[in-house]
Image (cartoon, rainbow, N blue to C red):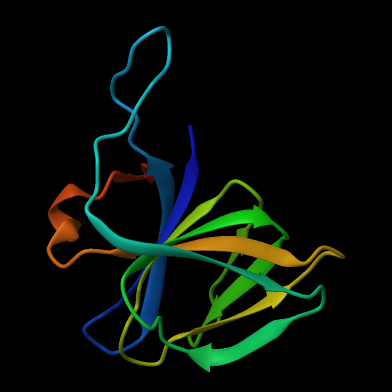
Length: 132
């Protein structure tokens, strides 16, 4: 399974997150495969080791696919989550108090930004983890 964290803005304008996976329900040749999601563009970015980014909201709804680097994300309420290589972040907190992040290993953060098309929320392949 592909680990995924979804972050969004709640009714109180604070950012919240939930952990889950990318839904991979079917495939062929022994593979599993997600459905498709409409996107607008993809771009790539690298931040040097030790990098940080203070409080901000996501500029748009997007997948952020981490290729290299380990990060600690924080919400204004003090909740933390970690993103590692291979993880996908669904950034939907485009308003409100936002989040911050900092690199926590000696690697640069290499990632791909995949901008979601308007209306793509109905087809996002995210499945939250079950809570006890």
